[in-house]
Image 1: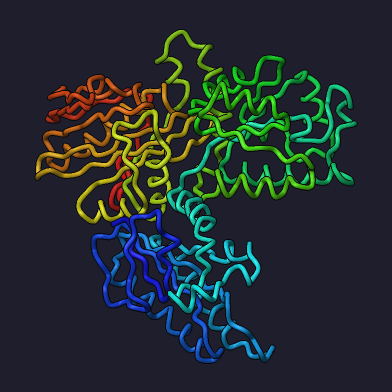
Image 2 (image 1 turned 120 degrees about the horizontal axis):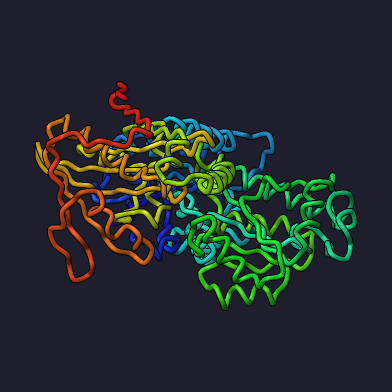
Length: 536
């Protein structure tokens, strides 16, 4: 089963689209081991306030008991408590409020120390509806379903977005039009000083919209521009208009010209080396939106609000549907700077006659580290997001990685830096032991940002050398083809592996004997961190 749900009332209608099994009412005695994830979805019961408060006071202890039996290697998703139905007669009787707040506070603090515990703020959903819509007493008395089953479809959509955020899956790039989208007015007609940004309405609405976009950028979403304008006019706006929140440096790339936007977006995707399905396109013009929907159906194209005062509701919808994430990593925060540094590297490459000379000039540093509490979130995130350079495209959560490590798998990440900047953790390799002298590569992936510098081979060779020192004599690898990873179809052969067989579906199996240390190019400075030690 995918989920096992601990509940104190009927909640089945809200998980009808999931592979879920449910506990008995307020029953924590059974914790099945075959669940992939566990959900704690207790709701505040109905009854006399003080009795309900006493009941709520027991929930955290029960939750801790459940967690002790679930194990630290499986995700436990906890819904916060929200009182949807009780009537407070005495205003200063705060017993139930205190009990609810205490539970939510305790879980929040607890989750900060346990990577497998994820707290979901259920009030984000319930606050959308008035009390009379949240509860249907007919269903409660007939089937003990407190939350109105008529909200099940809305809940399903909301929960789907939460699942995506928990899995650290989100779109990578927000592509923005400019005129009447990023600011009010038309630059070519109103001039750099005449567009509406800042001050009174509607400029104030566009200013708030830009602030929200800046916050998105600061959490790792790439911002790009696709606009029919004169580029020099846009540069003047970015450089001289004092009310602009977003400036040129906040965008990873732009296409500001009179070419059709479908071609421009394809060029942006190619420049950033991301898939079209990682992009969201925002434009006020319905004709432009329809063009992209028809020409580039993989690009997400939401409808843009017709009135500026609707922009803040619009950005909330964007975040909820495409860009929310449960937590962010160091690499997310510095995403824009990393892509800009990559553009500088590409420009620098043209100055050198040979690739070796270019790579020597970069002063490349690779730090290979095994799984720990500091890189866990990033390594899980990479399995969810990396598609192009990914030999097997297996998706793992933080709990999955911890469980694999507890069963003997060795999980490595590689951080890459050079004289242009630090890319952070951009590669991952997961090895599973087959016996004392044989291991299998379960996962090997690299971010598209660091391709083209031979880092994939240096990383693999470094890990193979480490295995050799641990007595491993041979390593198996598998290539599983997908619609996006064709570029790595021959990687193992280029890395010195021998092809063993090929299945009808294109899956390839390889093996490599390792009996001597594999040399890397001397322009890679490689540091290995393992088990608290360091070797260079």
